[in-house]
Length: 329
Ligand code: BMA
Image (cartoon, rainbow, N blue to C red; front, side):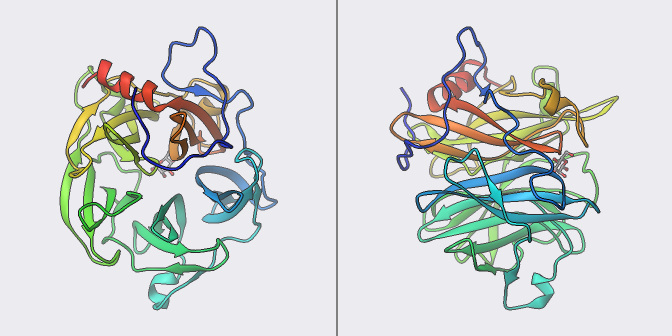
């Protein structure tokens, strides 16, 4: 039995594994949980992050508008399934208007560290880079300096300092629909100056794991377990019909999270359902958050489906660790 090191969350959404299911991850039976028209102005709501907050949940949602501008919006929920999303995007307070000026914002992650909630996202600043902000109450948001020079995407914080440093995974990238990309880990004392950049893992060239042969990127905030950090990530294959996004799993060393202890050769979830295969960008599952319960080892994965709607899937720490070890890359 593996163990999640973290808080109890008995109220989190959950469905048991369907009888006869042989896969490590199974979908919520009422997917998608958020439709494309969740707010009056939205064309699509996907690649979004949720977190326990007060006696319920808060979330940061990527809503692309009907003019197809990308921005991030706050929402609240009692059960983490039915969401009320604000109709206005987040507005950030910051020391330098050069940085708070919005170009575009997308693919948020949310991470609680010590006393506050941090949001990271892909932030337009002469190309995509990693924006960081914090909030105590999901009402007022303080934006910090961008973590890196452009071009970068998929900035994901670890939920605690490691050896005295904040740590962030990211994926150096380019100005477009990047045809390459490996995951790196960077460290900071103050969430402003980042360094000690370490390579974590690369794409895999070969048919042992072709689904992750074009680019990979960290997904939800890593989950602390007694086996190491459990990282769910996306991997991309370039096909004759475009990119296909699937989900995989790796276990990172607890003190040196740039060291990969285990990584699965097979994917854990792929676009198979209609709402994952058909939408504004077909064949995309894109995980951005999990909820976890340390008592039961349950994990709920929130993921974008076909760049259009938001889905929910379930697994457990045992399922993922067993699968990753039994299907090694
Ligand atoms: C990536 C990002 C994601 C998106 C994915 C598939 O480059 O833009 O937001 O889900 O492409 O289109």
